[in-house]
Length: 201
Image (cartoon, rainbow, N blue to C red):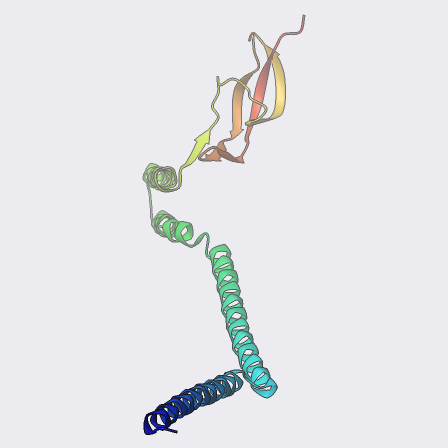
């Protein structure tokens, strides 16, 4: 065999060895990469114990939130009940405070009457107290009195204690025994009246 043929054969063998070596290295690298990926996936996947621990932690947090919300709602309910009770208990506090002035004026009038020689002055004092009281109730609380002789009789507003026939076309109030009172549009007390009715034919 000539020297040239020997050299060519040696070069060919070297090339085959290099190809085999490259393929082996690539196969080894691929196998190592797959094993590493598998290990990483195994490391990322939590164990059953870890899953249980995570669920227990989440459950505890949700339970704590629920208890806090329940406590907040219970406090709100108690506060609303207290405010409602306070409103009921002290609903008339302002009115009673305003009435104290009239009560004081009546006390002064009673004391003055012990040494008074003029009955008219006492009567005038009482009329003044009454006028101021009525004005306060009308202006501040919208309490209005109604019912006077000559008004048309309205069974929704008047309570007829007595009646008599007279020369009227429609039932008419002849006398007022007790005035009626309205708080805005609501009737607090019906007027108690004597009614004149049309003559029966």
